[in-house]
Amino acid sequence: MKLIEISQSTCVGCRLCMEICSLVKEGECSATKARIRIFRDEEFGNNLVSLCIQCAEVYCIKSCRDNALTRHPETGAVLLDENLCTGCKACVTACPVGGISYHEEKGIIVKCDLCGGDPECVKVCSRGAITLKDTNFDSPDRRLFMRETGKLVRKLTNKKYQGKPVSEVIGIPGG
Image 1 (cartoon, rainbow, N blue to C red):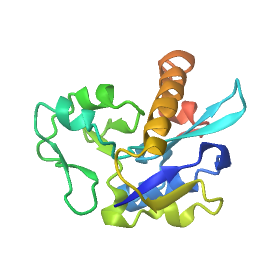
Image 2 (cartoon, helix red, strand yellow; image 1 turned 135 degrees about the horizontal axis):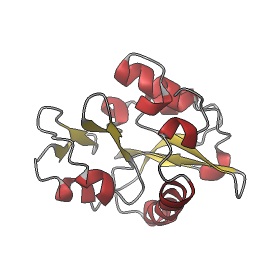
Image 3 (cartoon, rainbow, N blue to C red; image 1 turned 180 degrees about the vertical axis):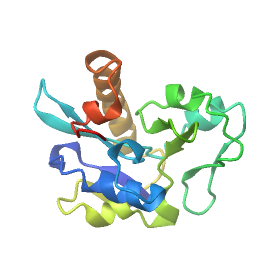
């Protein structure tokens, strides 16, 4: 199965992935509407890519009381049925890598759906930080990524940036 893999050390923080994501999914370039996010860790001076990695455990699906999330049988992507989502944010809390966001205007969550199996973010990442690879949901590399990224995202979003809008967190004025 082809799934997105992230090389955190390769990301230079150009945010092209965020721009193309929001353009494709929302029809506008808006960092706050992207399904992928780049956090800047000022303490260590590096960038952190956060998106749904379509994990094996699917905590988001298990936490969704409205059955709005399902796994696509062919692409493996966890998909959102916007008509069923009530915006309760249980999945946002359950996601171990911070890969699900809340869309303020729509009142529902948003997350990566792999663009139907051909992710646009992969195409624009000239540094190769975001790639599409043949792998399985439960590979040791994906488990390590999930554990380490989860720790960092929680640190950055819950402590250092608590209460600030996403546009401030990712350093883009006006979102």
